[in-house]
Image 1: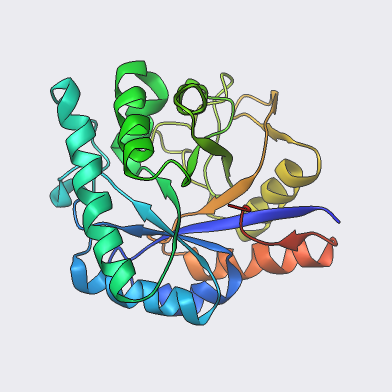
Image 2: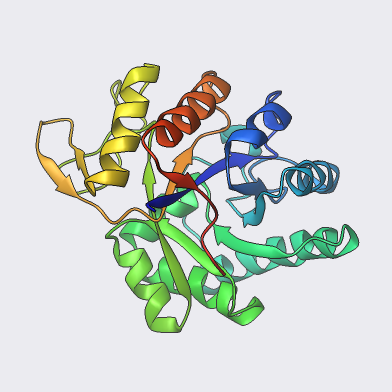
Length: 248
C-alpha cells in the first residue's frame, strides 16, 4: 500500500494547531527562535502525543520580527550553535513530557539557506548528527541539503510542499513572488496527489519536475492551514494512500 508522511509546522502561535493535528502524521514544532517558547513547545508536544503524531524540532533563525523567513549571515560555527541550542531546549521539554524526538526540520530562512549554501547545510547537519545521529533529517527533495546530511551519516526524508509553487530547478518559488503560495484547496490536493503518486510536480512555467516524496508539508501559519490539512488528508485517503510518519 502506498504511504506518505504529512507534516505541518506548528507551535508557532497560530490558533489551529489542535484541530490540524488529527490530519497529519508528523509535527515540526518551533523551538523558540523564529516563534514560540518553552510553553508552546510543551503544549504542542502534548497535543501531538494525544494524536500519535511524530514529534520533530523546527529550529530557525532568532528573528521573531520576520518569523525567521529572512536569510541571516552568521559565522560558520554560529549556524551549528544556533541549531544545537534549540535542539537542547526542545529535547529537555520532550523528555519532561515523556515524548521521543523523531526528526528535525529547519525553518524558513535557515531551511532555504541550507538548500543553497553547502557550508550552512553542513553545519546544520553536523549539529543534528552530534546531538542525536538517529534523528531523521527532513529537507527539500533532490537538494544538496539532503546529500550533505547523508554524507555526514544522517537518515533523511525528502520533503515536498503541497501549498507552495516550484521553480524549474526544483526549488520553491521565493516568497517575494506573488505566485509563491497556493491558496486554492483543489490545487493543493492536486499537487499533493501528483507528488505522491507520480513523483513529480509542475513548475510555475509548466515544466514537469521529478521529485522524491517521503513527506508532504502543509504550512501551519497559512490562513488556509486547517482546510488544506483536512482536504489533503481526505484526498490521500480516498485514493488509497496511507498517511503515516517516516519510520525511524
